[in-house]
Image 1: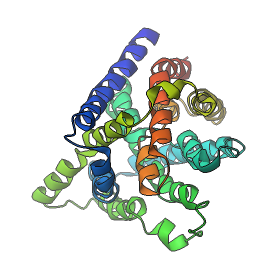
Image 2 (image 1 turned 60 degrees about the horizontal axis):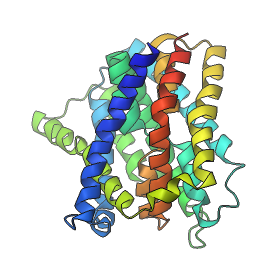
Image 3 (image 1 turned 90 degrees about the vertical axis):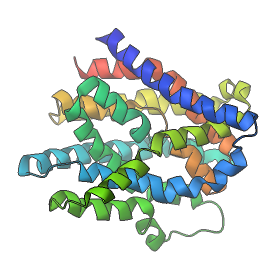
Amino acid sequence: MFLSNMATAAQQVLILYLIVAVGFAADRLHVYKESTAKLSNDLLFYIITPSVIIQSFMNMEFDVKTASSLGIAFLCMSATLTVGILIAKPFFNKSGDNKAIFKYAVNYGNMGYMALPLCQAMLGNEGVFYCSAGVVAFNILCFTHGIWLMTKDDGKSKFDFKRLLFNPGVISVLIGLPLFVFGIKLPGAVETAIGHVANLNTPVAMIFFGTYIANTDLKKMFTFRENYLVAFLKLIVMPCIMLGLFKLVGISGTLLSACIISASVPSANNTVMFAAKYGKDTGTASQVVAFNSAISVLTIPVMVALSQL
């Protein structure tokens, strides 16, 4: 089981990095540069990512048991994100302008690009169902707390409830939730169009990420103390804490495994997206995400194996 989980995780990381390599090569060959990716960032931010959220609601069938399970999964995933915020709080305060990047990287894992595919491969459709609740929790918090975290120290932004609530993540949840609860079926052409846009999520994000890495000094990635600290907190401390808490309250089986996979995935690729969006150092963000992604090939299987003991 351990070797099988390691192989599955390693394969998923390899697939993602092959797409990253396309973006890397495109930048180096001057076909699609980092500057163009930054200009295209709003397409991912305002259109593609919300389509993923709406699609996740459209694909769920509502009944009392399903809603109850979804609610429990949502609470578990929200607890994981909250613990991540608390874990990161005491650290990186002396890291200057990059502290928001490091804290964000600890708080938010790669839910859409890593957790969902891993749950599908390791746990099947039930695992994907539970993980989808985590994607919703992730987007609510990253588009609220995440935006606040990235802008609170820029000297220009104030804590703006309107901006934190009315953003692509929350609005797309408000659109998707009635579709799930009331079983509303959109016209087939509309559903297909949303699906096509949502399917752009992983390749577009990975290609953007590749252009950022092409402009990053990868040799320095292994010299920054903060990268090791982020990896330790995100990939080891957080999933171990959540494993203990979930077992303490009686979470077990596929739900437990899905929650631990979600807690164990490396820092979210939109750490780089948010860095680009809010004027932070995309090189630092790319390094911390790349470093975490590489280390997670070893840590994810261990954590999943522990959850299945």
